[in-house]
Amino acid sequence: MKKISIILPVFNGEKYIRKLIDKIRLQKIENDFEIIAAVSKSNDRSLELCEQLCDITFLVENFNHAKTRHVAALKASGDILVFITQDVTPYDHVWLKNLVEPLFGDNDIVATYSKQIAYPYATETEKLMRQFNYPDYDRLCNNMTIEKWGRKNIYYSDASSATLKETFFSLGGYDFDVGTNEDVVYALNVIISGKSILYNSKSKVYHSHNFEVGSVYKRYKLIGSFEKRYQNDLKDYSSLGEGRKLLYFLLKNLLKRFKIKDLLLLGIDLLTRYLGYKKGYSMKL
Image (tube, rainbow, N blue to C red; front, side, top):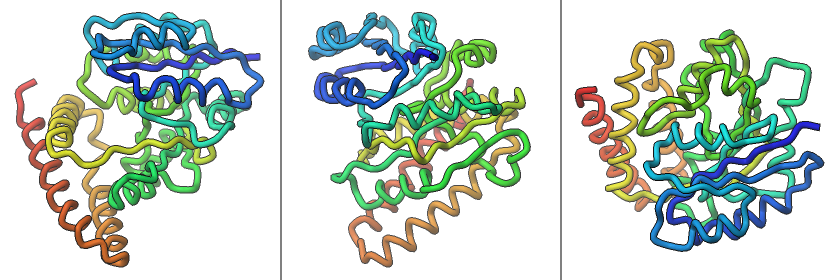
């Protein structure tokens, strides 16, 4: 039976760690699994807690979204790599089982990722965004479905994802430096290789972020820089159409629910994203 290695980057994560690890340990699954914590230098008890609660813990000197996860994967003894972030919470006791199950089948699926549900305290806009990006139906994505799914064909989130370790390393893994979107690079490599990615709506986690101008601007500045760096690889995956669909979905549902405050915040949010993206895209590589 295949073993699972769960890889968890941590930074100032004391408020999340104990609850998250408890939820993982309570998963109903027959496969053995280990938890590997990659802990960046923190101002709280993150390292101490991870050393107590995880199977493998190591200190990260210089965090990078890709490289740090790659180093952790090199320490894994499992056949399947599961990547999560510290601020997710498994929705139920079968999150892990449902996430990895498609990788056991006689198919060409080599990577899967979970449905993300906004936390109950999230803003209405954040809840709607999660509904739009993570619907109740599965998406099977490969090099034959680019026209069908558009940008969603390479939509892949390692906030909660799983992949075959052998495939991961054969495709180069995360052995590169990026400020964000390392999971998109891996998705591109999977699609180019002729294999498939499954958006797995039966595997569910809570995950969301409320709007903060500074963090949103910084994130979209990184996204803009990423899209410029990988513009040739992304030429078949324009995000404009998907962006228009999302905007229409948000406006329609916020108006229908008469969420005036959320509509005003949406305008600020979208402007912040646009300015951050344009800034990042205009920067020299």
